[in-house]
Image 1: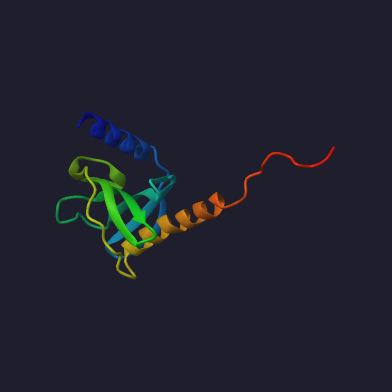
Image 2 (image 1 turned 30 degrees about the vertical axis):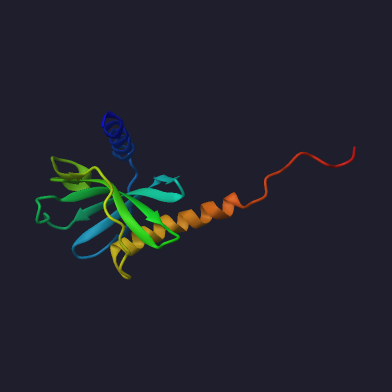
Length: 143
């Protein structure tokens, strides 16, 4: 229990000093991403996203920070951790939180979840290509 609380605290500490970049928007919300938080754990990419709602959500939140994980082989996505806030840009009172992984879902085409999955898996594909670049070995040339 203590270990999971420490891990959650570290994950949120990383998202506090974020550089949020607008990724997409609709009439209801804007999606931001912090590309500095991308990492791969057990083969799956993870990345922090933030939703900014145009009006207060039904649960009383104005924004939400969420750590997503993608399984790019299976084409699925889940939330690892998240917080909803009463204020804009992840500020104000914490309205609700999720501290354990959600179930895997398959993103519906044309949704924000599809964009989240695309961002994560684009990075994963680039990382896989980098892994396959031959590493320089010991020199075998004659002198």
